[in-house]
Image 1 (cartoon, rainbow, N blue to C red):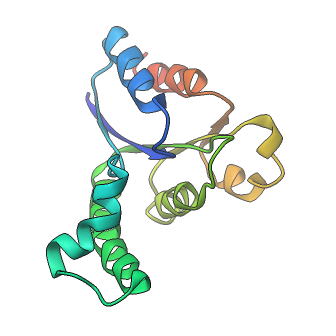
Image 2: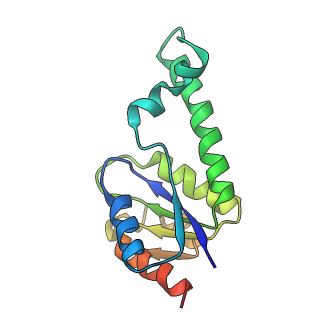
Length: 146
């Protein structure tokens, strides 16, 4: 059995690389997907495809259309979603991706620091599992193959 896993969450740290490296070291048969990690590309994709927009709001709307297309397609393709709510950045996209996973009936492992327990209590109850660290999520992923 092989699984495809979408890694949702902030793009400004190396947490995805760490999860991928540890999964490879454990020889887990997993293919990982995730959001566009190049922030500038994500912000500019609308104009790259449609041309220059008349203001910043139109530019964001154009980019979000293509980012949403990409994200939805990859979320539908995956078998499992691991969503990280980090401590440093605003987590709106993580919330949207995790909620989309729930709406698509995709199994969800939610990673959230203990101090975000209250803010994420409803989403946590919708997830199949809630953990506090990427290492714990990886242990849960490993358990699936045992």
